[in-house]
Image (cartoon, rainbow, N blue to C red; front, side):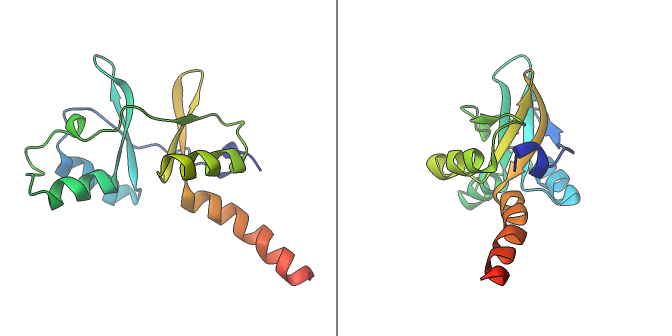
Length: 132
């Protein structure tokens, strides 16, 4: 199975000057754990995850004043739609993260998460168990 089969194609994109509270509200409303941060004048494409917001708040930073760019991961590992789920899972395990931005021709076209991969693999695993 390929990343294109598992990824979410509705991608939440935000700007680098959104506050952490604004980002968290948008992520909560969309029920997603990550947002793509587009900064055409700076770092390009980055990712802000629920863990980034949690860490900032846990450190006592003000979510109404903290801009997303200060908490965005910019050394991002990107997937392509043609990666296998095994390749995506390996990249996530190696890098210690739970989301991959999926790029096609340099543009974000989706996000694949550990949950997406598990959702795809679980039925296959269940069939293996039933077959035995």
